[in-house]
Image (cartoon, rainbow, N blue to C red; front, side, top):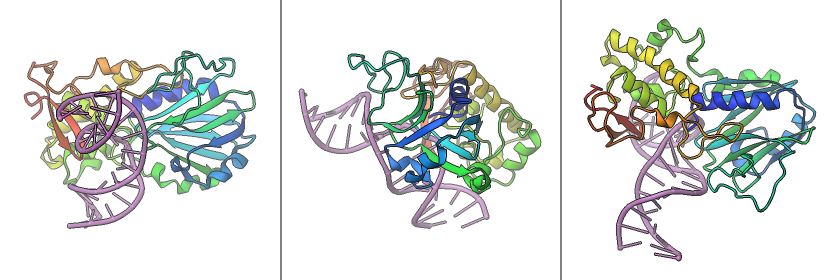
Length: 293
DNA sequence: AGTAATCCCTGGCAGC
DNA sequence: TGCTGCCAGGGATTAC
């Protein structure tokens, strides 16, 4: 569920805390989420490495250290939070069953905390992921060019890459449905189910429309609506339904502002018709049957 | 080659 | 109260 606005919100919050911190130890409790290299190699590689940059590309977070690149995908339920050692554990504290947060809004290590980075100052960054769809990859700096999951991503919203010409070129000749294309990270990076449904609503497009059926004007509307819905998501700190929290343990507020996502049966905010829900590309898809043709 | 279905995983929830 | 079965979905993999 973390999509571009949620990942960016996490990135901003983490950058405050982890930039310039030096890693002392890496603890991997669940090997499933570690793609490469072998889990036993992580601590030795990252020990004494200082985090120099925290960047984002699509839904990926990238931590750059002196000699390594740490590429993180949060999957569906990944949570990445900073933990300040001065906020000590208290077993009497209430721990939220879903977010795993204590009263201090920080993560205690629990059965869903699959990986932790510990810093030399005693603070830590914890990765918690209930459904374990997240993936962690560690590359030596000179190997990072092999990271095809990163380099094959499509155009990045909010950058000069996101141009009308590239948008049109990416859509050219595609035989698929517009919703499927928007979910494809090789076209536009960072969109997921929530913001795809929202962008299609803003553009007035039915999710089942075939790409080749879109007029120039419809493509233009879609091109403009994508950054608009992402920007709104970012402005309100992301969309929290169940698991999403930022690096400081706070939920987002964008779920209050969604036009169609998870609003099936409720009135369309534009025309009051009930919002419909169908399955497209194995994903629940929400749209207004009157506003989206 | 390009698209579509399958699978991974846990917790919430409806139904009984 | 507790069990069962279904649902949510990003993206790699497999199938067509």
